[in-house]
Length: 163
Image 1 (cartoon, one colour):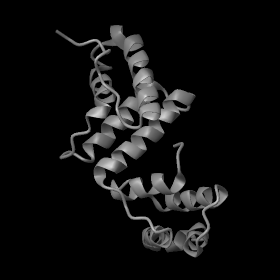
Image 2 (spheres, helix red, strand yellow; image 1 turned 120 degrees about the vertical axis):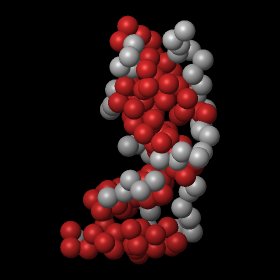
Image 3 (cartoon, rainbow, N blue to C red; image 1 turned 180 degrees about the vertical axis):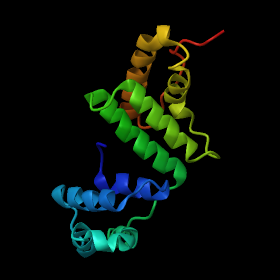
Image 4 (cartoon, rainbow, N blue to C red; image 1 turned 45 degrees about the vertical axis):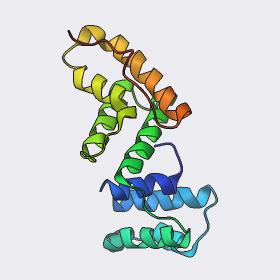
């Protein structure tokens, strides 16, 4: 996923999507882009035998950076924006991106994240309406651009609805 490695990792921790390998990779990426706190180097150097410690070390990294974990709402938006960037760059298809964003919304079921409606609607209808796949792809790409450029809102007005 494209985006700030610390923000992405923090969002993954909040939504219980982090893995030991993911946190170590995030630490390496964070060092590459200029983050520099002692615990970051500890996290980057963890071995497979220390997987249990990776989340705690990441939380120390956050404290050393003066950051706190995001809310579930903010975590879903952060990861959705990263997926939207991946859709726009062609790293993932609009269909896969929409399905992943839909899955993210299910990890915060009590949150109303209307800015992701286009992705959820397209993902929920994709299999049932193969004749509309091209329209769904365009709608998801447009929504991805709005989400990335607009900072968090993408509406589903342009997608075809079943009547």
